[in-house]
Length: 256
Length: 274
Image (spheres, rainbow over the protein chains, first blue to last red):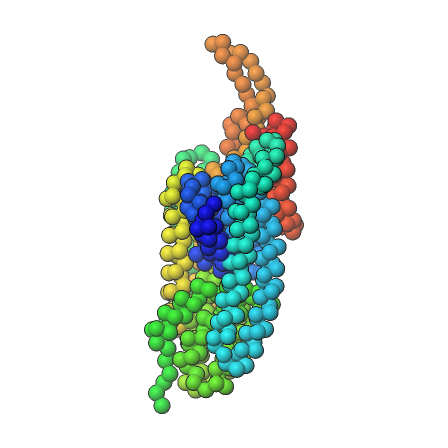
């Protein structure tokens, strides 16, 4: 790997790491992170395919409230490096992604705890109405989140070339990699379950079953499902007496 | 004395700063520095005295946490209240904090199901399914569509919040919010149902019966074929329910993922899964 490539890996990894705390542009999602690392390493196609595979597994990973998802950024970046530079199968990539996501979660907790220090520093700057100081606290904390992914990524990238990591991964028996790939086909239900639990209201579950049955017996694609779902939602709101009753009441009050 | 007013440039500046709301997320006060940094252009414009600036900065370094996109209207409302305060309206610190805290909970309750529960899983599943073929269209589609929705929410949310000012508080408590949340949940659940059925693969190749048909060809019936005749996607559905139950019982998601990996490996080893 050339110096240029290593610098680019560090840069992309930092962007993904920052993305995983910001949760704005979604650069930390496997679909984007793996694609970018693939692009940097000159094998974008492998990156895209691995990204798609991991994305389906991570579909329900999200930061809601104070709860934290496994770290998709570190997992995506490192497993893409291993698959491309270490010449591993997609199955091996999946195999390493999950433990790394768990390790990344620990690192994230660590950085989010360090940031408490910047919080108190910001309080001090507020006392002297030092705008620049507060801004610095904010962006240094963000930078640390970038380094959280960039440093491990560079380490792995360098080690992957020496063959050390490769021989380690090669020693994983076929029953494990193949088994993990099979599990990759249904591991996504954990994500679905998280999403459903979040939206869960028992009286809305018929819509879930309707989606399931329609998908099982028809060939409508996801865009079609989105449209049908939107129509159902609008119809439900329009026909639901709990809304129409209240809205007419409000209108009556408005008229008075 | 002329009224102090935020300029369009200030709002643009706040819009860009709001993209970094979560940058210094920490376990003590979560998004507080990010909120403060977003409000800085407004504070600079509205308060010239050091003492007033200090008070405003401290006000916005208090605990804050909400869904990041839906934070924009809250920032708009807060900026509008600061503007009124700077112009001598009798608004005290507690009122501003109260509005912030009062809005962040309910709005997160709307933002989470819309953006994390519906928009992202749907677009990501769409993008990922295209990406599996190796096409760049998959990641691009996800990235562009999601970010267009995100930026639109933040831009119009900030402007709406600022223009509506304190009015928004009463507006949001009405039915509109509940309708929005419920619509998002319906759409999300409907698509989730489709995803469970279409994008999950479990194959049980165990052979139930094997006989030679009249045409001399061997006819094999596997467990999976029987299940598919019964109801395609039945096993993924049952597995989803099991996961929902376990997650509700506070089983860690990572632990669950590892357990399913073990199921995959052992299943393949026994020949039950392929």
